[in-house]
Picture 1 (cartoon, rainbow, N blue to C red):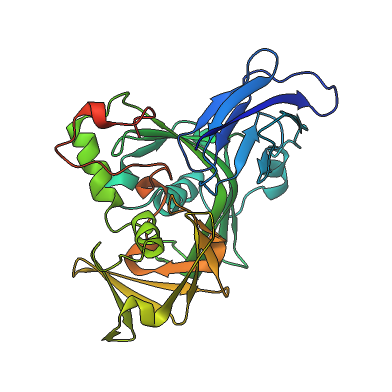
Picture 2: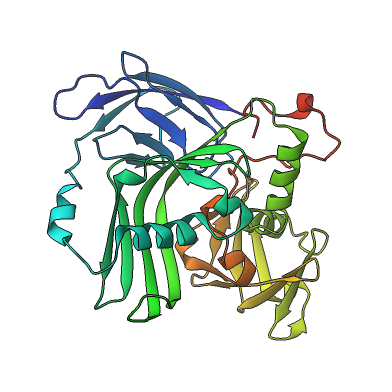
Length: 333
């Protein structure tokens, strides 16, 4: 059952209210902004295991895992250091701005149709640096990144905290850039660009959801991987999911704890190949399919190549193609 969260966002030094601060649940469409008194009110579903993010331009964001639903939450933000100073510190790193931007787009937004349909509205806020000795490209942003995903019809506000591409090999002419791994972390807020998504948009979102990490995690938590089109292998041998996956249900909750006995290979609908490996004894999946800790569950293959351009909000509801616009939830997600 949804509960209401109320709070006031203030400047941590002056105690003055901050108007138009963003308040949202990470990776969802559930959010609002503060009024001229710094106040906000937001519905919250206890089943969603997502942090509450409070952000304001020029201030350090706050991530809240716990909050009071029976009182006014007093939240204090403090001004952040000016990351633009890092441009001076970095200087010329041997890579052109164009090359770094292209690499960032490719490995953050993705190289898929959806990824290529994305546009970053404020690329000038990105601070990119290539470390030649470590063969590493890093990115920071002076402000939240505003992304228009025309493929899936979302605007995403991404509060990027960390981004890096680590390369195995970089040729002298920079024509060959072999990537070892990509890592990024932050908080994201989704807004549908269409109040009532069109049939084309619904179809694109459904196609993106099918076989995605979100789809896999929801199917895993409900123990219906096979029915949803996922086949599980250890090495080259197909196994029943229960042989290599242990599910521990939580009393009075729709969430589950999952432990993987092996590195698992996954085939979705007979063609899309992936792998998943857990580096913790157990990880948690809530009723929305949100898993944590995300950094300790690693995907390879098709699932590992999915980037921001192919993500959907955690509160995404899969609609049947024949569904009318009246079937959409109030967020139109």
